[in-house]
Amino acid sequence: MVATLFGCLLGGVVLALSMTSLKVWRQGKSSTPYILGQAALSLILLARQLQVFSLTKNIFPTGFVALISG
Image 1 (cartoon, rainbow, N blue to C red):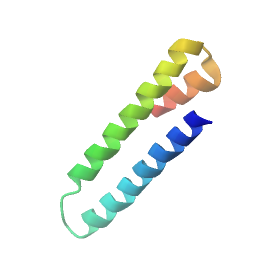
Image 2: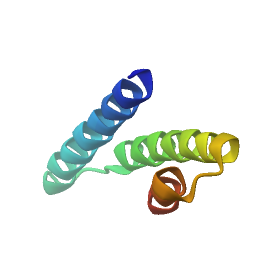
Image 3: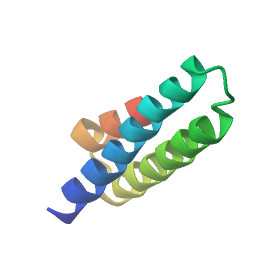
Image 4: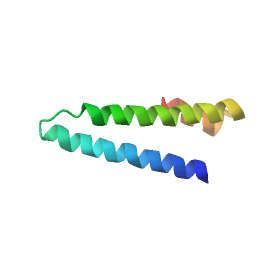
């Protein structure tokens, strides 16, 4: 349950950053900070999935999710 909430929370933040980045880019401003924030959060999600995969050694679903996260 906690892992699902953690993933949904970070996924929602990545989505919000991407929408904000697009709005800023359309205004002609630099969206680099938003893109870097997205990359950092995606890296956190990837590290979390790789940690779970290393503990369980299950290819599906954990390994699959880790593969598509990276």
